[in-house]
Each structure stands twice: as C-alpha cells, then as structure tokens.
Length: 231
Image 1: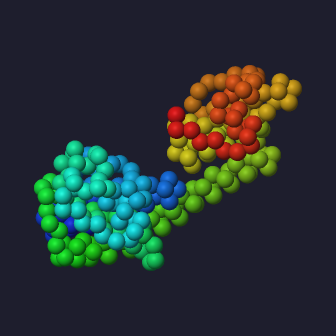
Image 2: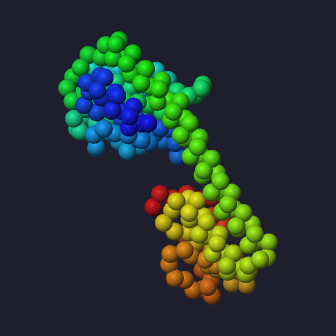
Image 3: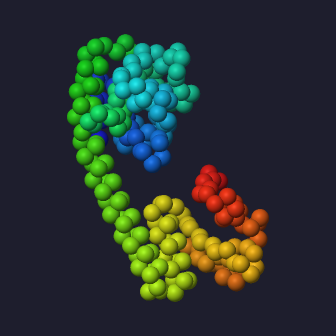
C-alpha cells in the first residue's frame, strides 16, 4: 500500500521523488517505508527534524519552494539533489503515525492544489498504514509471549541451569533482533561474574571475571539498571 500511494503521489504531482515515513515508537524515530529514488533522504529522522520531522510533530504540511535557502533544512538532502519539498502528516484516529513527502530536483512554487492532492493521498495512506502496523504489532507480541513462555517453562525446573541460560540468551537475541547475547551470574565465592551462556562466541564456564573487567555486564551489575551502548 505504501508503494502504491507513493507511485500515485509521483504521478499526480509530477515530482521526482516520493517518500513515506512511519513513526517507530520503540526507537522514537521516523523510518522510511517507501522511497521512489534511493539515497535522497536520511534513513532515519527524529520528530521535529527537517520538513518530514516537523510535519509529524506539528501535524501540518510544510511547503518549501527553495530547500537550499530554507532555514530549517538538513545538510544531506541538498547534496543529493533535493531543491524543493512538500511534506504532509499521516494521521490515524487522533494521532500522527508518519509522513508522506514529495521532492523536486528543481525549485518549485507549491500550489494549493498540490497541497490538496497530497492531503488526499495522506488520507488514504494513514488508516491503511495503521491497520498494517497494528497487525505487525500483534504478531510481534505473540512471538514475545511464546518466547517468554518457553523461558518460564525452563525456569520451572524442567531443564538444567545451563540449558535455561542457553534458551534465555537465544530468545533475548531473537526478540531484540541483535547479532548475539550473553548471560552472566554473580559468583559469590569468586566475587565476580561467571558466564553461563553466549550465543555466538565459545566461552569458559569456569572463568570468573572481576566486576571491574566485565564491561557492560559489570556496569549493569554494579548500578542495578539496564545499560545501553551504541558501540
């Protein structure tokens, strides 16, 4: 549906590029679902950032006739050939869920008719996108419940601790969509962290790592809170 809507925008408004962004609530970013020409926009945008982010945050259209001179422009799009842009929020119910934007490779004076056409396209895309997103969220929720149930069954004593640790790390990796996961346990006698499971790398189950040398695991243990690192 996003691809069909994008094609309709490009043809109806005679523009060079159409993009459709959806707001991803877990990450807090606007992520592209469709782009009629590659490498024109950023892969992710923050709400309030550029014409796309502003249309989402303020729930109104933004028409930029000369993007290069616009005070709130982003540095990337201009170098990729964007000269003029028009963005419109996608709304479902009473909240914004994304943005549709069209770009031109030459300066352009957007008309009320242009804005009306884009608003009609947005009115079609918004509810359809919300329906698709809700279905996806239900699927993810079901997968999460299945994974947690498997860990709960193991924790009830059906499996040995090492097997429980293996299941827990594998499910954590899959649910987080990460490349790997590991689980450590505080060793009272050794006063350090003992690794119980690692999904990708061989490890020594008898090795006790001092807290200060255990990286993110050690820091999370010390502060008693989740630790998120980009690198």
